[in-house]
Image (cartoon, rainbow, N blue to C red):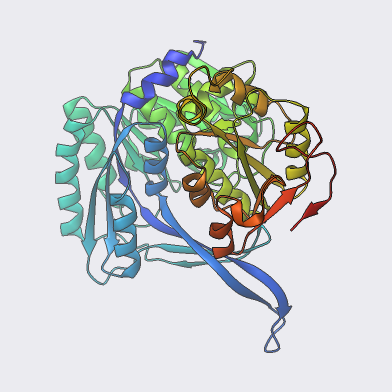
Length: 482
């Protein structure tokens, strides 16, 4: 089995992938529950915020762009508010070329999740699953033929919402084979004849059993069923996703099992889309199939270790290969820090923030960071970049480069994330992260704390930590002034 290297991971950013399938709008409504309705024995959710993002095939595209790949998306939405919102969200992503066809009177799939204290109270679905209009299906296939020629790999993301219905999948597979483009299918339902001739089909274990009528209780049974499926429908390869057990690849070279890469499972939402996107980018770059599946398995393992419908970035994959992965994974850019902060809040966790140069890190800093961590569930540390420190402190600074300072901070158990920033003040980073609490040393007053006014705007607060004598901007005692 081929080994995964950092060069394989870096290559993913040069891929171009076409995604065709069911796109939907995922809406997350967050709030607090403090009372029960007098009208019925149900909780009352006081709404605090709503977050919307593309789901279904749109989530595959999110994962593609997170890896740095260029993506094109072909799908169908309705002429409604959800369709308009979805069109804006998809079109607003960098590196995405969307073709969202509109069918009048059709309902755009909208999934709304109501969440309090990190727990989902209810999910409501508004959708229309009958096949798209035949004329629209013909137009979709024509557009896809041109888009296939401009991209390296085509993905069919079938969520059973009507886009990939009837003869559409067969026509797309035929067109891909005609122009020599690989096509990967994330299937839905028990009738896999619709995808016959695809290069790779990626069912989960229940789908494999439904399509073959065979047991899939262990690795041997999965391999046997996958081989039958491959031969029955002339698939180039079958990749079976086995949830917490990893993946199985069956192709012309035989059977290979990939054990799960997830040390801790937080949330399996979206892991299949993550694996699909990673597999597609790897095949777009003509990496060996075993490497592509290994990368997809690794990405899925990272995804389930996150909270919510998470994307996996190139940096996540690179960190996972490192012997110091658990430490280096804490060092993230602003975009990833912002995403993680939002996911922590969705889970009901309190997000804290502090910043500094930490050049070099000393005992006073450690005490201050430990005190900061006591006021939140996850602590994000903003670290001044080298260029920033030089502007503020002059030549000869910093004593230690930002990479070394970040690594030392990340090694501390009280630090959840380290985010290097180049702005003169941490205010832009604070505005992006929207922490619940901001902790600084008591060598200043609250009105001197940069970002304190921002936190008040969204209901957060700043706290001042007492100082450790001899170590400015540090603290030893757990008492704080608010």
